[in-house]
Image 1 (cartoon, one colour):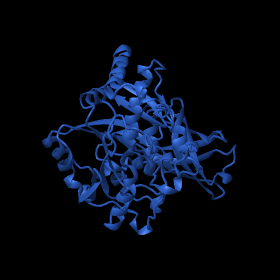
Image 2 (cartoon, helix red, strand yellow):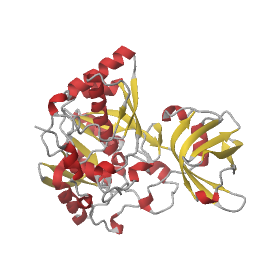
Image 3 (cartoon, rainbow, N blue to C red):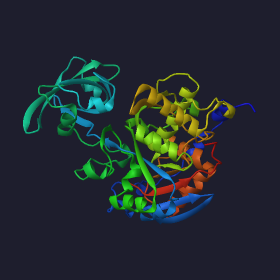
Image 4 (tube, rainbow, N blue to C red):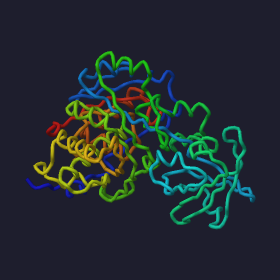
Length: 415
């Protein structure tokens, strides 16, 4: 049967993935305790309303939950010009001396990052901005200047041996999502992080994980549910709305992913029962499968998943989930690697066939966003029923909002 993926993709009507989200339904602050939120469970077309503390009871005991352990850095900083103008800088991605985010956190004295610039018209190409910050009890001067004005590549320089992560923590603030429409507060330093975050480098939190507590993990372990972790450093592009006329024209942001050998082995052991926590974990896991495809087909050893790479294949051309993971494990053995680092811009929209993920723990997403398309790819047209149920039953929406457990509506492909 011919794969008409492009024709089907271009027939998707993007206006069909909007819904009316009243402003008062946006959760601007988190609940306390973290696991006190509501939980909507969707399976086989049916919907149940529960509390997040019920999640372990809704999961089979032989499954694997996969979490994104990235940690949000204080990536937004403000600089005052002598004229009084305030320049806002939001760190996006390291460029020099390394593009590896974990390594970029340990750079000393100077580095270059791609940034978003607020009030750019008041910051001329030749201007050097400076501020004094206290790092580890010592006052130091930080300077910022353009390296590439058009690309918003900014050099940050400081006159001590402090690592860049220390500089960022002393300088910046946690960049809350723009739709919260409020200033960052001191409590956000803790509440806008998952309890298991330990890999610095994200500019947005993997918010599905904000509900999990140590008590939740204890209940999961008591039931025999396995947990494992990957790292996807969430970028600001996660908030980028779809403005293109067709899904294929939408520019997807590329994000850095890291997988350990421990995770690869856990996935191989549970290839039929994997559920990610959050859309970032889901996109990472599905990207991992496609990296295995590239290895299986001897295409390349580079981990770079382009946004539409998964779609043109005929089913008979593709390895099973287990075969893909085995190809990755074999490559890691051959190269004596204990982790894999890559980049993905995978775009998951209706018509996509899930390879590793059988369900999803997630919050409620912005109307017309790429994440709504992802949810629709998983549950089909029932995404509208799910969101209407959540609105009708007073669920809280977006980053600090309530949770859901969604099981895929389509028969999974071979494992």
